[in-house]
Length: 134
Ligand SMILES: Cc1cc2nc3c(=O)[nH]c(=O)nc-3n(C[C@H](O)[C@H](O)[C@H](O)COP(=O)(O)O)c2cc1C
Image (cartoon, rainbow, N blue to C red; front, side, top):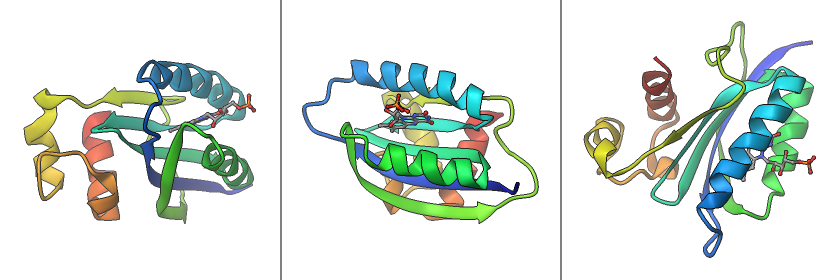
């Protein structure tokens, strides 16, 4: 049993209602709790950035399931690593909804105020998540 963390970015499919985000989060929290998966899901500017951490085999099969979820597309794995300890152990899945009010915060980690995780370095992506965790 080895611990692993996977971080990926994706985009909400056009025409998928924003009310789906809450549903995704509810199911994720419930399932992750059972699977001992922890992590964070950020949504803003129609884009997702998610970290999932837990047992390596569990993370691999969860990512496969998430990958095939029709509500989002353009998934890009930003980082995948075996880890010694978790960074999001306090949350089955912490949801962060970015708004205009977070523009300066987003700018700290990006080239513009628009949240576009596929354009961020993987290090910036993790740093942003850690800032939102604490
Ligand atoms: C952006 C995004 C993030 C998701 N994150 C998780 C997650 O962390 N855990 C989880 O179980 N499902 C997550 N899901 C939902 C899964 O894709 C899937 O719908 C859900 O696990 C239900 O699976 P089931 O068909 O086995 O019941 C996510 C979906 C999306 C679109």
